[in-house]
Image (cartoon, rainbow, N blue to C red):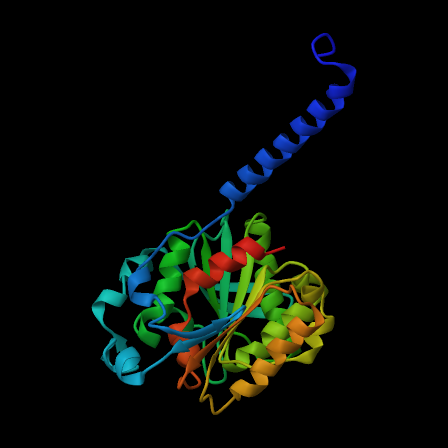
Length: 301
């Protein structure tokens, strides 16, 4: 190079070489980033978008179409085309003994060497069985099970003692156990209804707040302390799914909390999907797992 390039152009060449190398490495890293493959996307796609403004979307929801026409037995058994029960071959009911207590949980997929881990934390009156029921909520839990099993991932649906510090410690221990077995996995926690109290507590803990890659609040509650949490400082993506007629957690309060996140950090990776006319359980039934998780995978710290 010194024999062929004039001295004034050597620096230009070196800078160009460095730029192209960096661009190539960045592109390669992006190409190697995990992206979940489709699973029944046509059936689980949002029926219609009524409006969309930035990170806030309003989706059409109709009980006659999205429950009665989708379920063989409304709210109890989804139509067969929404479900693939072959995933049960990689489903296990397990017990993990930890310092925080014994944790019964259902694991679907790879219990070690997983590329992605998704947990579902149930609400009041639920159990680990809710998150792995293939036929309730329109088959949406069956979809997340198949998405994890089909993409080298792990899906966890645990029991826990309460929605307070004890429950949070148990879920933190469960996350820690599987994170050690899958050190390269991105970890996402989905919380239904009152389970959201645990989502916010996990975000506030130093160990889990510094480890999780995203939070999904499904018909759930808000917590202003999140704005000063380790997870917030890491810009952990947050997804909110809320029914416009939720009688338990009013949509207006969750929308206000969502806006407070963006007010504090305009570029924060947060999304809000409002299911128009939907009620408390609608987001669990209607949330697009694949679309949401792929967005989180591309934004996770």
